[in-house]
Image (tube, each protein chain N blue to C red):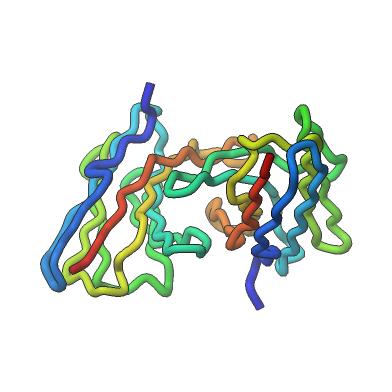
Length: 111
Length: 115
């Protein structure tokens, strides 16, 4: 089983739609959680951290459910510029700070 | 203002011909990482430096080596590239204390083609 699992998509949605991505992680002792965005042939860039209390940044909302080992990202009012791959990232517990990446979920927003 | 710089952005090499990829940073971060990312896959950590301490991932092939001559620079050496080593190589940096919810800063990557 992969340490971080995501639905690869692609999710094809019209502009203005609301879309949700899910992610599960296998290590119950994982400490920190993030969503990264990666555009085609570019480097990953931090989109937002994910906290147990949930957090919102404009049109983006992230949630963490530690009991279910589940992370979500909600994008409201999708824009064409939101088209990218969204990577779920977890920091393993103990030792050094190692990022564990999911394979990513691809989003395509169309007019 | 570029913070993590990778050179070259595109590298073509021949099967078995050694190649070196370069990474430099202006953030003065003490941790530097090298990742390999193949098409439609997650970035895979190869190794990292914590200051001068080298930490290799257990499944990183011996074909991959790294050097960090100073805080600002880190190199990835592929001694005998195979066709399966064609990928994007990403360099990243971070501060020492990840618990403050800092994150890793990625360079733009070097796309390696092996002929």
